[in-house]
Length: 136
Image (cartoon, rainbow, N blue to C red; front, top):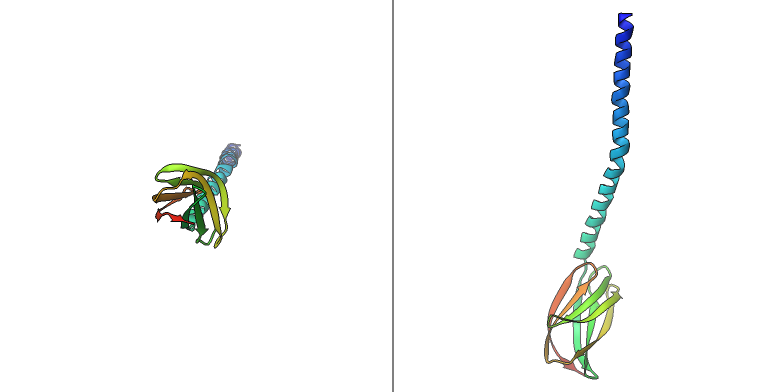
């Protein structure tokens, strides 16, 4: 009898330990997957942001207002969300530019002879350019 009680005690202890680990696994594994997915997505977003490139090719005065020609020179597309002239917001919106594509952004800003143009993307990158005004 004494041997049977020890065997039953060992089996019950094993059952409790295995059950505890199973409950712990069911609770922890979804959280592990969530953290892994979050880390992967943030890493991918940082890699994409590092591959963005934009060039302001031309700033011109047309009908008394400034226009900016922006070209995507990176290997991924860029979504332009804001344009600043001399640190003043002159355009905000959403304009997608594919790699190698050039688009014009018309602003409501009056013409000025020299500008610091800053173009910002949806991924948080901003590029600044010093431009002299081209009239025509």
